[in-house]
Image (cartoon, rainbow, N blue to C red; front, top):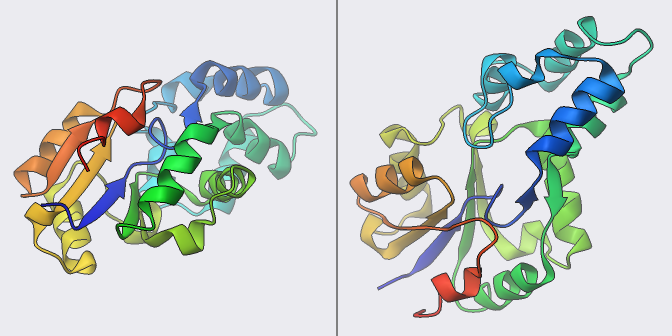
Amino acid sequence: MVSAIVFDIGGVLVDLDVQACLRAFREDLGFERITELLDPSHQKGIYGEMEAGRLSADHFRELILAESRPGSTKADVDRAMGALLVGMPPVTARLVNELSTRYPLYLLSNNNPISMARTYDLFREAGVDPQRTFKAQFISCDMQLMKPSQECYREVVRRIGLPAEEILFIDDNGTNVEAARVSGMQARYYAPGSDLSLLLADL
């Protein structure tokens, strides 16, 4: 029995382009160390610190600009980060809107304030109202908890207020999926680019 659905964002609801993000940091900012920080699943260094809620977005921008081309701005940093996020496919938007009429939906993402602002814009562009469609949003920088820690999943279950076994979690990272199962949640692996509706067809 599924009483609620929790979605990861990047790679599940929003398509990603890691190479475009790498190019933007290198070519637009002249920031060469981006490969040391950027990972589609679990960011590293100062990027990871921001996603863990231990580094503010403004401090992150300042640290990036300190190693960037002179004249680069905070807005340039935001645009480079936004290059990672391609958009929400129309078919995904339709599915999410339909599911929201039948289930309480939630978001659970290792993420940061800069990327979340862009994510909300992409949701709205696709016709998904993030505030109305999702009952709550569990974002690592706000929670100061990150997948795949058991503490993170336990806190999500606590806040949702349903038995763990009635909560279905969808993620494109196998480690996160397995950790959710260990916590007692139902969990399914989504292969990026595949048909999300097929994964949820039995609902």
